[in-house]
Length: 94
Image 1: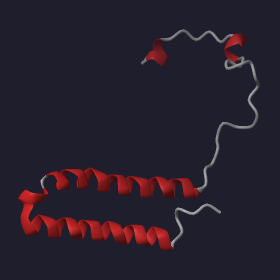
Image 2 (image 1 turned 90 degrees about the horizontal axis):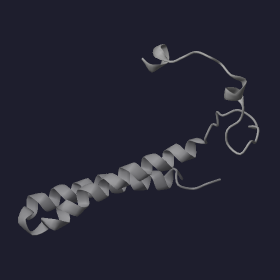
Image 3 (image 1 turned 90 degrees about the vertical axis):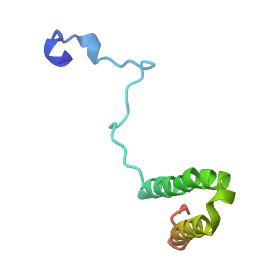
């Protein structure tokens, strides 16, 4: 809506560089290696572990055997994910 209602008066000064007066070199589009995305994905998965692990530890005594078994299964699944990431060398930089 603002684009429709805003005045359309192009100025040469609007096309000048803003930051530090330096001309940009190259394009603004930069492709990151896939490794960055894989590390971010592994980080999010194990960050979810922390989100579920802290409340579980706080109520550990009241959960009983069923709660402990459930969390052990959850940790086992995440452990398999970590093992997969380790074996695929996702966290190693070349």
